[in-house]
Length: 179
Image (cartoon, rainbow, N blue to C red; front, side, top):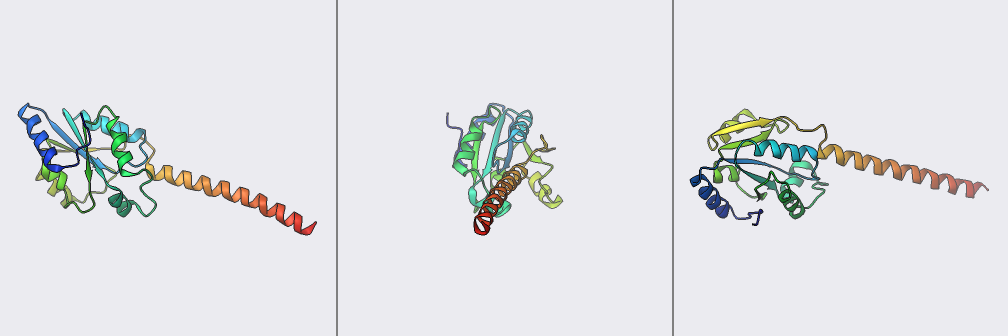
């Protein structure tokens, strides 16, 4: 069974069928760039809120706009596919930069919308979300790590390694010039 659903009409049809079968639909979303243990634990907690977990995943353009020009680290197709290997995830739905605000929420009207406490949702935004959801559950971070912290560490270590190598080469060059 294909776990990546690219067409919102297909998502709506599948959700309708599952609701007819009495299933509780849970929705969460994010970038899920450079997948780590916090992501996996967050998605597992989200899955525990119902029967079917739908994960909206921001496309590359949307991540770049929200996180900066050097993100995402992992391309959208790879992020979509990686998430399908997590047992908690039933479906992955790409969220495009040009989608209307809350398009996926409005499309499936989840029984439970799971949001992260680390995402700064304004009260008026949460009120808008509540119009389309039976319940909103706010989860705390599930790990002390974050993708941004990992990217900073990789970048900082790379710069530090480069500086050390450059320093050695400069010393060699100066030694050759003065010898």
